[in-house]
Length: 438
Image 1: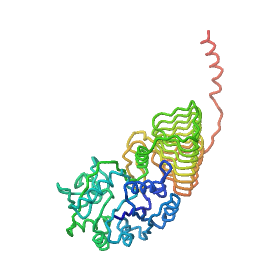
Image 2: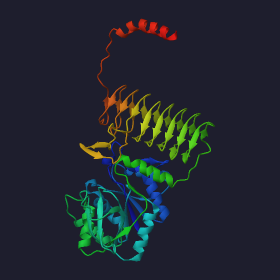
Image 3: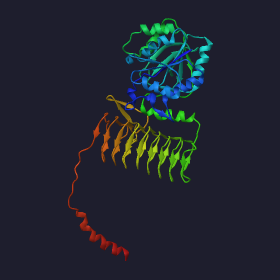
Image 4: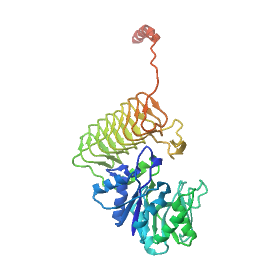
């Protein structure tokens, strides 16, 4: 069986995070986690479909880890998954194929149940169905009691879902020729072309089965999904503390904490798991790290608190509060700068995406920060805002809105100096103090 891993997305909904395939988790980019999971399950004949924007980086990663994987360029990214499968037409040939999205983080169990269903031979195509108890803006499967799919409904309105089965992008097609034929002939301007092609296959008499799956699943569509992915990958990883790491005797480490090579934990630092401390990272005196991921070469400076956040590499902090945030690489926060993560009315945080307010479905969410960013001292960053890549934000200001890439942000304010009338009261206060002392 051939496997195509779809990785050509442009991560528009994740901005200013440039490519979610290369978000680092516990020392490895996400796409490496996905590939290793496929290999561990027994899939050997794998191709990665990327775009012009990331194919070179994927090739460099594969060279680094010493694996040979077919690389395929999807030239028309506007065709989405349909374009990705068609780009891999020559690779697939006449073999059965599994289509897997790098954005869908699942357990190995997902691949095992799919293989079991495929070997049963009950259908021509198999799609994983995950039961959900609340609305998710994705594709839904409508199936009969035997599990045969009659319809795929892409992004129905809330309350109009045909079932509670979400269509995860882990699909097996035994008749790849028929799949390619329908994708080549599909026409639609409203729905995703790939899903339309599958619907046309059903109408053409192809038996398609929903395969029940009750394991972990987190689609990485928005920045607020990053923490859930971290917690899952952390849960399946060995809880090791590298021998080369230096941990002060009076540092406090509670729960499961992974500490990478040459990390340094200073006196009085507190780390509450689950937490990951990356290679060459320093956690300074009186710093508190809880339920967070810290990349390599970072400094969690004196009296900084880091809570439920994901930091990339080379992030510098000093006397800061960073809560429920996603921070890129090569970022520095001046002393006293804080991220707000809770509205005064405690309602859900909304994030602006191309002029549309997207509900994060949580009332605690902080900053989304790109790469190569500097923030001055004593600056307040309001909940749910974005700072674009290569931006500077000045000192002593409140930032309540998104900052575009390549910006230099400062505020206009005026220092007013006037006579201090209150100093005339000092004599009276001194006399009052004397009376009180008597």
